[in-house]
Amino acid sequence: MAEWKDGIAKLTLPTPFPVGDVNAYLVKGDRLTLVDAGTKTRESWESFKSQLGDLNLKPEDIEQVILTHDHPDHVGMLDYFSEELHVYGHPLNERWINRTPEFEKIHQQFYDKLFVQFGIPEQYFLPSMKIMKKTLVFSCDRPLSGEIIENDVPPALPGWRVLETPGHAQSHIVLLREKDGTMIAGDTILAGISPNPLLEPPLPGESERPKPLVQYNASLKKLQQYPIGLVYTGHGAEIAEVHGLIEKRLARQHDRALQVRGMLEGRELTVFEICKLLFPSVYERELNLTISETVGQLDYLQSLDAVTVREEGPTFVYTAK
Ligand SMILES: [Zn+2]
Image 1 (tube, rainbow, N blue to C red):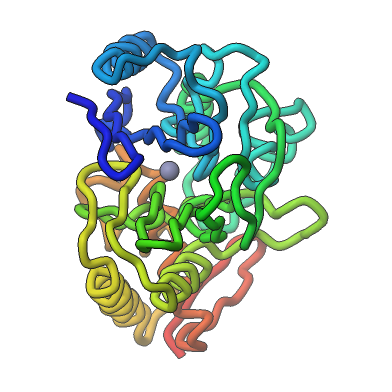
Image 2: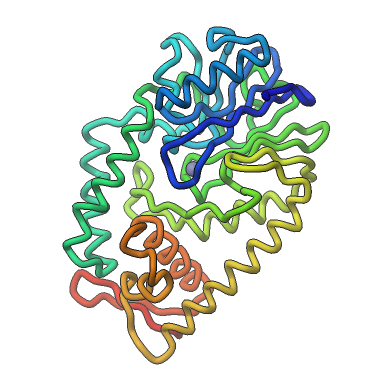
């Protein structure tokens, strides 16, 4: 049952995705704020209304929305709200929540080229794109009303601060309440799992794709510099001791990368070949997620100068340095 605690109420909403439920948060401020907006499904909307009812609220009582990032399970339900409702987020949400035919074309071309570079056999191309498109059905179609970036005080939430934490999504931000270190972290850090460093097309005006795992590690290290108390996450439970958990996550990722480097000792492999070795039982079923995880480790190893990459025709091959 939803309830207020220190001006924050946690709502847990169902999603059709393997990750399970997603969390959204009501925050009391100068305006009643919803942080993140669940998936666009009837089940999610009904559950949302019933949890608002526990607090004697209705959807019309919500005065603004702030997005932690653009993934469908965090934005989709926006389509069920009035168009008047103000929605704030990092500017990089826009291309995903208010998709244009031009972005869809860029998106398609980006993945077509990437699949070849990664050495993924052609029979996987279409199914993989289909899964991506199916996921976007649960997203929303509306623009941001206003942008928030690093160090901003979010609209109508005095005492809170925006920190950019790119990695899991390019648009990712967290909200930090400065008086007690309470943080609403979206998917930047989760209690039970490490979020996937998802691949995205180059940012507007750039030609290279972002390196999401390298960015993600930098975001975690940045959070280590802030006094952080209780962390409200995008999926699952709160985190009481985030600094220790971040240390553990960074160390585990480093070990995983060393395992990948070991696979490349004395031989050359494509991303797809490494992906199969890393995830032998799930790579076919979860190709998009396992590929982005694999590429993340390779980007990380490259940033340490621990592997080299060579172009063989249009395909990349990696070896340990
Ligand atoms: Zn996400």
